[in-house]
Length: 92
Image 1 (tube, rainbow, N blue to C red):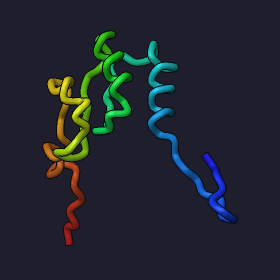
Image 2 (cartoon, rainbow, N blue to C red):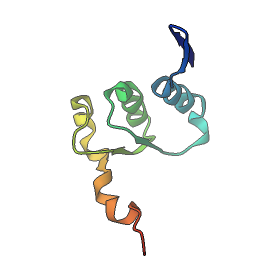
Image 3 (tube, helix red, strand yellow):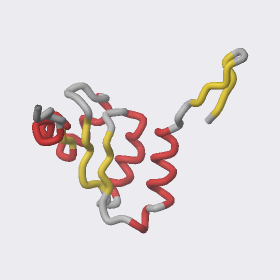
Image 4 (tube, helix red, strand yellow):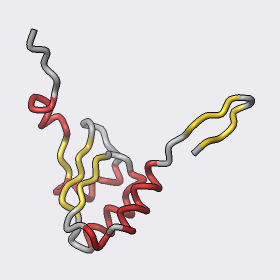
């Protein structure tokens, strides 16, 4: 989305709303969803996915994530568990 800040045109993403919208539009086209976010704004989407048995995992970026998501603890995986496999190592 573009908006004006004085004379400058700035671009702002609307990732939260886009993710929810596309998850629902494509609902019949996937078996399970993986949400990569610790943002509580996705609570209603996650709750719905769980109720429909469509949530596989919630991957949170760090140890701190929204307390709203605690209810979904069995689905939560911290990205730190994958850090050694995912991090770039310069072989020089």
